[in-house]
Image (tube, rainbow, N blue to C red; front, side, top):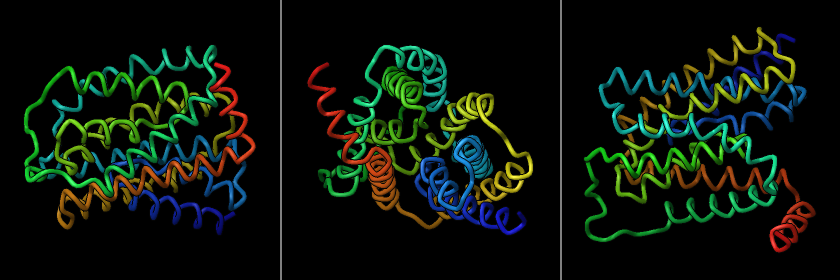
Length: 263
């Protein structure tokens, strides 16, 4: 058991560190990683989501200490995502969720590719500094609905849509890190109520995730340029898409394509 705790803590720290560089929680990779090392899936889900929440809180604390956190820009995203997540969960009972998951994967690959390969104009390094209300509200609304429908964090939605609006990638990584814990904690409570939870694993994995998220954000703040963060975010989105594609399998994809046509 002690060796398992050590491996889980190491995975939590490393993955939280890497994903914090892009301001995104690591649950989407940590949950299958825990399953691969033998952790029961009903235990891996709440553990991964808890680490997701704690690591992004560590990232947010780092941003707060450096006085680089734009809370006013993030509040509309947080508020609208909290309100709309239950709506998405309710709608999931009536909509073809698997078909939506396939559409979401297409979105991830497209957004990730745009971040990595798209070359902007001569004003590419001039980012907007205002704090609009309508744009972030719409982003939070969509992120909340998708989170409720699919049971995933909203980072894969928030980051690309805010970048498209012209905001600094480093600032968006910080805003995303501020927003993700709310949806992650809500999902953690839901999954924990349905499955088993190991307090011992949560403590060790949570502490490792917090330090990983904190240190990853420190590196992002001091060592990385905005365009580097943008490309890293793109790579993270594509990794999430590949993971989802692997989870669904070819047969499921073909079935979903038929489902989309029928719908």
